[in-house]
Length: 521
Image (cartoon, rainbow, N blue to C red; front, top):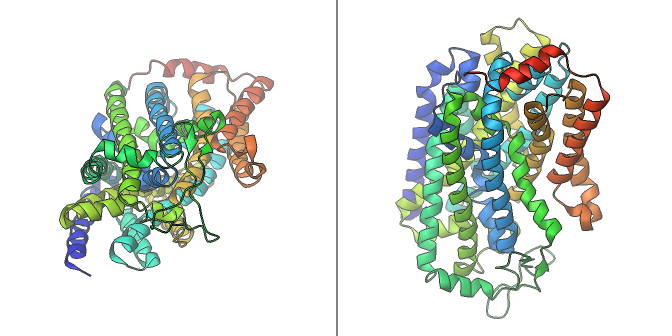
């Protein structure tokens, strides 16, 4: 390992040590009760709520997956996805945040999404609680796996270490501070990591533009690639049978004719924004803020952070293609463009700090996934269904055992170093968006929604994500649309139809729905 690599490693290790120290700092408070461990006692301020929500949501996908898409396919696929996500962020904070904060407190002081939905419909038999918890476990295990892939790719690319080994080490670090400090440690570190992420993105973009000779030089270069800098076209790298991009005699990568990027594809990519309404790691921040009146400030912070970060990530991919046109020749390797630019353009120690941005993105997401998955089993299933008289100590024990098991499953998913982060994340994102997004919106905004309608919506959305992704999308054409959109629509239809066909909710449920609009908390 050379001197530059040692400097990078030292900077990253210092960052990791600091994050673990935060977990230790919050350990005592977190262990006072399961409320503190899972939702921080609803004590988050507006800055931490906003920054931790966005950092936990974006994951390593923001610094690796999205720039990789822009590097490989050009502007269209990446920018329409970014637009959808930015719009979804704003609308979610505007429409859902305050209502969910009030309603979750009024509905039995619910501290998890399955618990809120179950309390919202006054369940005796905890069917919604059980179904929602199971799907959280499934999709968050996949999500955690995508984060561990990011960790492994980062260290194997930087230091030539064995992918599987460093991936497992990264998983252990995340498990350690989440295990110790719970939601408070997670939110505090996510706030820090949100700052690191946006600084890293802006720094790498700035030096990349300078190194490429300015914005005009980058534009001149990428416009020469068919479909690369178009909103309604997409670049088509020419690949070998092994899916490696071919080079011409001069060593330049080859592209075919530009592909079409029509209205259906735009709807598909914009529909990423629908996922926000069902993301437990974001929804929990709404529920955990100290006062509902502070959510307006949080919304502004979150939206500005999101817009700047997404645009910078897309621009890094475009600038990277201009700077390192023949450096990354597979779809999977393209996701390393942020790493290549950081280490190639920055002094070693600064590169290490910037690389901590990827660590920040990865850790801020994986800790949320592990904690929410563990709460789904320990609080919602174990205490909510099987052992209603369980003590806080027993709930915490089951939570930590679950955390370890979910992490282990995520590690198994991440063992394949050729996994494409964007694809793994897109499936899990669709899963949460279609499973929980429609029912969260209907539960907060339509008082006629019934328990049967909620169950139908959750099952329809989740099942259709699998069916569409694995079967229907393979038919091609109109059916190739991102599975989130049709699953979200079908889930919404199921909720409306079943709710209208079943008995109107009891008066107590209707009264609580109205009271939640103005509940003071």
